[in-house]
Amino acid sequence: MENTNLQKWQPWTGEDAQSDREALNRKGRSIASLADGENVLRILPGLPGKRPFRVVREHYIKGIGDEGGFSFACPRSEKSQPCPVCAQGRKLSRTGNETDAEAAKAYWPRTRAYCNAVNRDENAGVQVYALPKTVFDALIDLRQNPRSGGDFTDPDKGFDIVIRREGKGMQTRYPSIIPDQPRHFVAPVSPAAGKL
Image 1 (tube, helix red, strand yellow):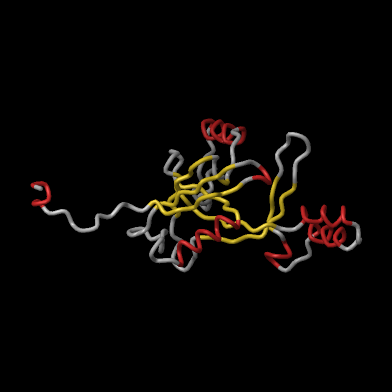
Image 2: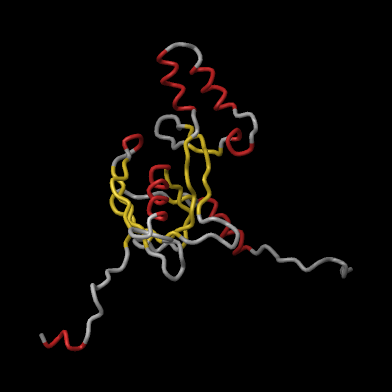
């Protein structure tokens, strides 16, 4: 007997299940990161009523051995909720021991700015990038200076940003963050210019 009161539904085919298994076993990151050397990004504008960047204070927990670590938004910074990682950092910083005070630094949240961007050197389409505070500060400076930057996220008048990354881990540096604007002539070229 067929129940005609049921809503239409989408069957889960064998091909769907196989595709889901492949996606489950695929290794990769959902958040893109800047590669060593030059990265040419086109940072996309925000949706109506939204900014192009989402600033997050997050903790990074190191993995054991070769295992990768993970990060998560700090509940204290994001939602004014208790944060056990911050509590441990405060506990270590208050012991009066220099070694503990130094170890406490690893517990403090770090600032990241997330944005949607297209990396011009990859064929991956739009990706979410997590940019460190130093890069975000430099991008704000570019945005605030109309002579060297301006609104690089503007879909019509915007431009790519070239971010140079060097080093690994705590030694990572971003020595240059510059606009990749098209070159402009001093004056329009006239047909007579070719006769000179």
